[in-house]
Amino acid sequence: MSSSSATTPYFAPRYVIASVAVSLGGLLNGYDTGSIGAITHMPQFTESLGQLSPTMLGITVSMIMLTGTLPSMFAGHFADKYGRISAIIPGALFFGTGALVQGLSHSLGQFIAGRAIAGFGQGIFLSNISVYICEIAPLRYRGTLTGLPQFMATAGVCFGYFTCYGTVNIQSDMAWRVPYILQCVFSSVLAWGCLLLPDSPRWLMLQGRQADARAALERLDCNMVEAERDFLMSTEQTLSLSLWQSFSLLFRRGYRARTILALFILGMAQLSGIDAVVYYAPVLFEQAGLSTDNASFLASGLSSILMLAISIPAFLLADKWGRRTSAISGGLTLSSCMFLMGGLYAAGVVHPYGVARWLVIVAVFVFGLTYCATWGIVGKIYASEIQPGHTRAAANCVAMGLCFATNFLVALLTPVLLQASAFGIYFLFGALALGTVGVLAAYMPETRGRSLENIQEAFHRPMLLSGLGHLLGRRGRGGRRGVPHPHELAVAGEEVELELSEASTEVVAASAVSVDAVPRSLRLDVSVYVSRYLRQVLSR
Image (cartoon, rainbow, N blue to C red; front, side, top):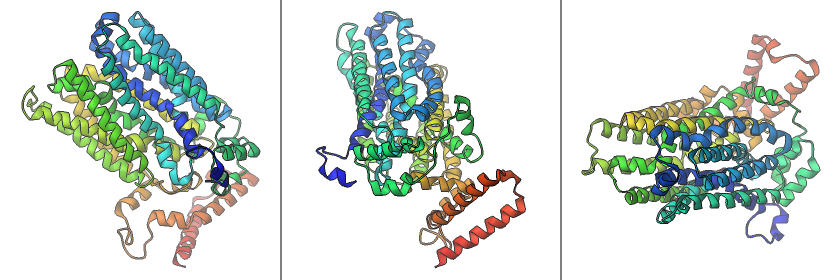
């Protein structure tokens, strides 16, 4: 913390308070996720809006993700142009409007329209809250704070379940309308809180507003020494790009690998099947043999409590565990749970009696707990960390758009696939999770313990070789004596690489010569020279 934080009257540094405030967006997301499955399962909802077929149930539940996809794609462009906070506020207001329409609905069409409006707002604010926190958080606590929206989302799921569990006994349509009143309140608090916050200091620096950036750092109680070292002395400024230019920049050389990795991680996290478990938990527990409404509701609520409980240490220890370790071990456990449930249903041994149904129920619990402790936390942290400052919002929002699209598919198809086959969907999710583990093991560099600016250096090396280096290890960290670990090599050579990068940038800017125009043999000679120089540095 800076010296100014010593005299602050607040019980915590103001960057923590700011992170909690914007993380209400995660609570909104989780609250809707936790409540919609229970709401559509209520007899009062059926009496008000009619019985839903599996297809119509999927459309109703998934509409919020469908309409969140498109605005999420361009929300990053507006966040880059007008600021992170300026993108979050209108998103919160749209979501609140959608919640109001849902709560006042007297027909299914009106209810679906309300979900569409809420989804539009969610698409605008959801990815930008992670970007904002990532950019204001100190290096030491970045993982924990950037994981806060996901923790709040898990808390929202739990809160949503138990709100519905409490209101289901109301003998009127208020049983399912009360949750939407609460969503309106949360949306208003999020918008109001953002009005009191300064914008991201890193974004202000990219706009050339150094004085405003320093003022924002002081308001947030940030460490000025760390800020000076990492970005305050930078002269880099963002370019004024059109919406299409902002989008196409993400897939150009130098940015493509990071964009694709962020898209892959967030997209596959949803295709693991977590939304099938969260949205349709009452249906899954009924399928496993808990036949009464109260039993399935209670089991769903218990799963949400356990998911929240496991999220607490995962959230607090996010900066203690490696991102790679968490992602790979979590993926193996997720796929194992899905294969176990699929195998039990395929063998035809799951009945309302016997041990098999309890194995399925336990597997559902373990799956949800594992996701919240690993992929749920790591995915959003990693997707935000690996992007350079001038594309962080745009890339994260495009990745979130893909996340919404995959969410939509899972929510839409789950009830249909469950009706068609008791086991096929589990094998599908298990195979997708296992395939994801293989890709991450090969292409995911570690980012824990590195500044946002230094993380970019990891992507200057071949991704596959970096991943294999992490898998094989070295002596001192598990490998041969005298051979440096890739992470050690990166840390030791950061200053050398940074100087070379800056020098090459100046040369290219002065001569206007493309890197592609440099002969391949010359590039190889330079690569050999740099490697030898780094080995000399390490041997001193």
